[in-house]
Length: 360
Ligand code: GAL
Image (cartoon, rainbow, N blue to C red; front, side, top):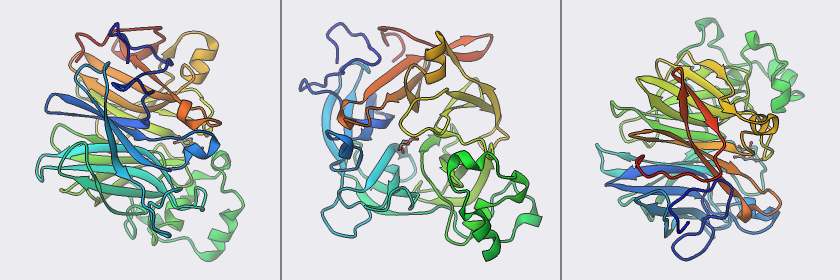
């Protein structure tokens, strides 16, 4: 994307064909010495935020020169299909399953014409990292299963009166004023499955994989251990940081601890990042605050970006975020910055241009 080998956050990043990389809300897979970058292929204008094409994949060995690998998962021209052209298909992430030898993609799916009501997780699978990925299915998460970390006294679905009582306070900002002690949404969604919007995947050193998603009307993250194939839930999940409205989660492991960078819940508009830490994926997670250092506006907007992934490299993690352009989706930019550690705490500082040489 540059001829001088530098990463320039926020600039136009050209691929090997001279076209701005089109992989928004993306994630990385490192496999066989190659980095694969999967992301939402956006198109022009406001309508370009919908999935009109599919999931784009690029490959690189140095994180700077990106080769266009085409569309890894295509949307479908069949009316009523889950991933019909024009649906919302966001934040695709791909992991490799060493047991099955398959590449497994998860994404946030909203059915065509239904706004953000469906709140589903979608899954696709491939024998090769660049695809084509075969769509397996989509749905809510963990239907009929209680989270591991809620008291048994709440193991009862909401009554219809209780459901009616919360209909009026659906917006994610309103969830902040809900009384957490009532344990509303996961009880409401027990039978049909838990909502799943902004999401990420994380594979631990022991081969266990986790799906982390904004659930409960975006108020609470759910962390689900995946099954052996990585294609569904193992049936074990926890609620994490209830009513804190974390979105855009990305996980990395550093010196044996788990870190999560996430955002507040303000749609396409950037907001202040949040860093959290835990000794286990299932938590408890503790919020450390905003990891950004810089001017007031840089700190308040995460350098005008929203997290999407953290790439772990032998010399430290790299923050990857999106600078969305909701009015012309295809013009969205990428903000990548290496984490620095100060007294053991990860922080981010703006860099105009930097070299990943020595990191990868
Ligand atoms: C953001 C979310 C994006 C997208 C957007 C739609 O909060 O992180 O992935 O869903 O809202 O408004």
